[in-house]
Amino acid sequence: MLGYVTIGVKDMDKAAAFYDALLAEVDAKQLMGMDRIKFYGTGPGSPMLAICIPYDEQPQNPGNGNMVAISGGSREGVDKLYAKALELGATDDGPPGQRLPIFYGAYVRDLDGNKLCFFEMKMG
Image 1: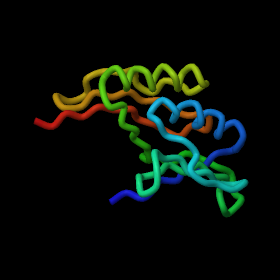
Image 2: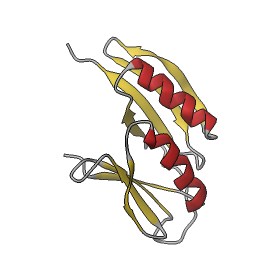
Image 3: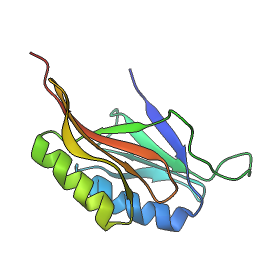
């Protein structure tokens, strides 16, 4: 169902270094890209996250209510992604913890203020 999600960045080199290191934690990497946009995923046909310099050449700003959720695979994986993001310069937006009986999550803001969620969800 999901093809890709795109978020705007201000400095492509800094953003690419952040996402290269962060997404390597979940076995994702840059799959394709150009100067102003780069796509990350785990392989062909998988959902992707794209980072880009806005096409309209207007300043990047994070959307209010927009968030990208990245599966940590486990509580340990969530904790690891959260710690890695902070190590890479992200800011805390909600430490790891149980949010609902089926949902464990952590929240950060990337270098450009985009909100990321790392999660584990167990249904039944």
